[in-house]
Image (tube, rainbow, N blue to C red; front, side, top):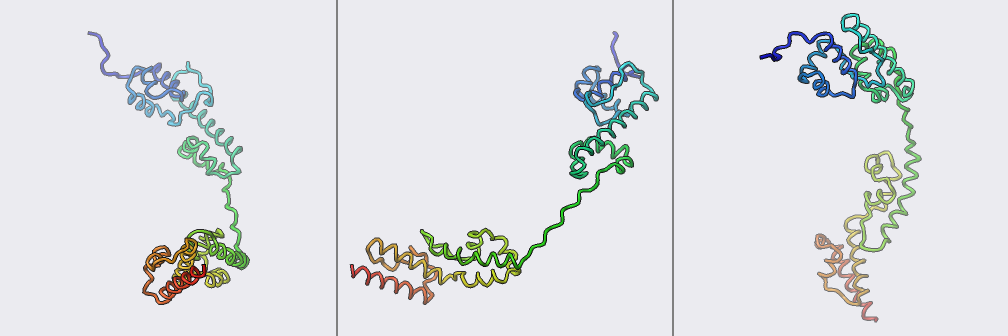
Length: 267
């Protein structure tokens, strides 16, 4: 017949316990609710009613607050001032340690402190921000020097591509850029590199020139096998099937087969 129904008032002792538990960041809201014998939503409602700080500090960092004090307006004012002093101290310590790295870096170290001060003590916070970290001025690029250096690397890179072992690779701007490590530079800023552009035009290989070089490579392959291939075999190995309508390619195929016949007859 005796049971607890609606709670009219929790009382000062209950509020004092809530303050003590709330100031201990190691206790979760559910744990506080369990100790006080209420629902977690009740804990949140009373923390808002009592205007407790949403920034919960660890006991090791929090100021000592005697648990036997009685709640009231005088106690709230004292606790509020103590918390304000704590937030300011934490911010000043962080600025002394990390201020040389800029205000954004300091904010990232103690985001809860910054947020609390921004909401409750913005004027003081703005007066105690570390100076903005100015970006270092970008160094100007001497395009003439860069153009000369890159253009000097191109002929050697083209020669390496031409004489490398294995299946031939086309001597293109992309291939040369990869070989010397300036692919993006040549693709994006070739208009600022006139000597480089002129050198590339001299060594870059057209589709027809590349096809002829592949035919020559395939001819050496069949010569090493000691036989004259059928025309279709030479076309397939050299990969020039899409260029058979070109007269220069057709002549190169005929010349390669004829030369193979002559060389193998001598042996």
